Image (cartoon, rainbow, N blue to C red; front, side):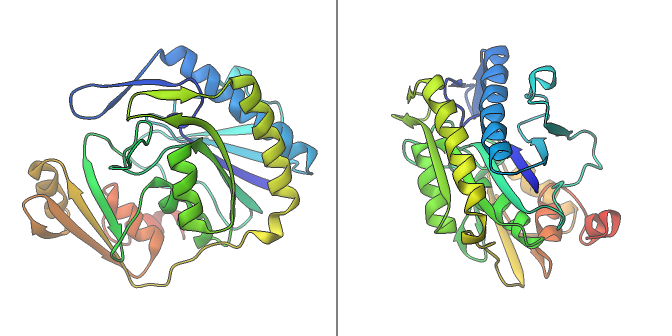
Length: 275
């Protein structure tokens, strides 16, 4: 059984963050990376007990340099993104299920720990076909594009609530509770790792009860940006300019749409990666 895990770091118990004036800044980075790796390993333990024999982890935070590969579970292999030609996702139809570990809520979520949408220095709001969406939903739809259901998400209370609202049926593991964006009650990491192991095992054993959530096209992605200069750059690449800080991307293909968000010209990403 082949499993895909995408990680972030904000939704791990014990991760500390502060404002750098505009967005989020992770502090105690070495500790944060170790805690992330340990939570991933707990999830892999549970997946293996449930029958997984091929597990690929995508280090999805920032520069894709957060998981300590020398301490990664021996059953798991690691995707690391790098360079301007990296794909927007490493998943394909060969995977049976997907999980999101260390997730955070979308920008503007009350009491969401380190909440943001892809870039805390760039995006104020993001709408897909008129509905607010964050990273949790975007990644879930990318997996569903290939017919792969998302069966489990871990993160703070706000992130887990967002996942339930978006997916409906999904296993969620709360690892901490936000009091504000940078103030948090962290649940004890030892207990968290045990719950992650048990939750991953439970979710994989019940994988057929989690449908892949798909959205019919055509697709429109509206981005409200923090600075009009960012909208200038999108406009130069062909995006429709709605106002001084808002742009609109359009496509009949969901992967192509999300690829445009990170700078790919329309249809270029799918041509490169044969989606």
